Image 1: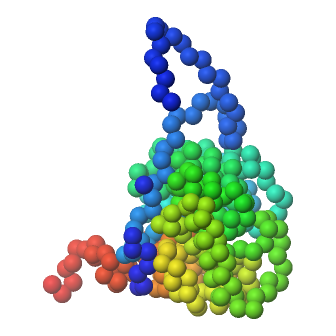
Image 2: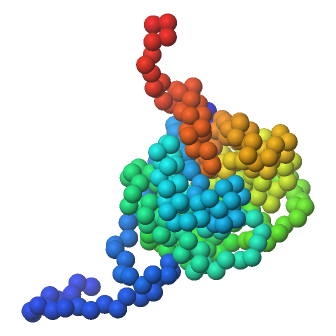
Image 3: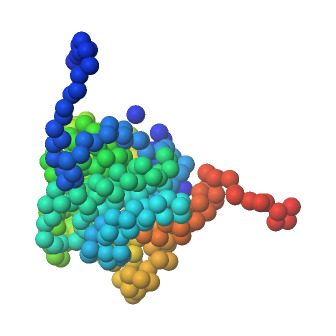
Length: 323
């Protein structure tokens, strides 16, 4: 497999006993309790000889695949813990689906995702990182304060404050190609050269993020399969996936159960697992280093087998065949 991305006013003490009273201020997640100190964002591990699996947790009633099964807080937390048990390296929590629809106020989005992130930061093993799928800078700020490590912006910095907020918090950032206004329809997309136009878009957003102060080593790129693209356009992006590895940054492949898989095979979303795994394997060979998936256990097994084949991982054993 190709190797990309080789590479954290002093005050005077009172003269006697005193009680300091603080009035809790409302927070973006809707609570008024005083928050404990914010945990620092953790950097992504080196992906030069490793592929990370990102498990999806959607706290929405209308999500594409799980259709609200993880809407309740406890169900969302359990889904995140289960993803970790199945081998996920990251858990990606979303409060708004990408598809067109009525806008959701940032306050309400934060109320959905912040409690999940806070719980998972406390309950997950320390090596499982947390991501939040959001395009609102204010939500990004709130989730990093709650314990998120990565902001997954599927709209490519549509919020002009996003890059500077991420830079200030020290989190990592996913920059995704999508050209429509958030949650707005974009029928019949047209590109003169979709591969080159996606590359130019990512280059421009990368430059903007770095200028805002986000270190390159904390940036991930996502060419955005299916996002504002037809199946034929997405297949062109997939065939030339290696073009995007030339940035020297980790590539995120969000392919799981997507329409281009279904239309390629003529299958409903419930039957797209094998096609999704095949697409994931294809992008891994061309530089993908994070796979965002619904089916964690199966994808982890795929990744580990390919890592063994690449010589990046020792076989789990026992090695008794023909010994």
